[in-house]
Image (cartoon, rainbow, N blue to C red; front, side):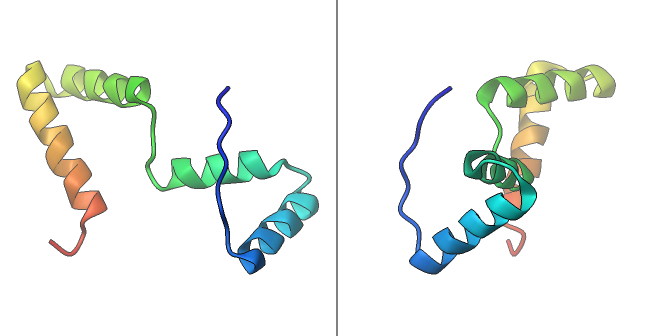
Length: 80
């Protein structure tokens, strides 16, 4: 497991510590969950998703990657 140092606004850090205490979960787990909810995934997870989508859609790797790229951009830039 990797370690990461981040800088947070004091108020946000305090709120995160309080949420951790209320929920009985480590701060790292709360941050990890937030990243997953925002769609941040490992490369392995993304490749697995593309492989499953390609299998279900019966398309080749290039077609699947194009669809995945278009969908990812649409989610990340909803106003474009």
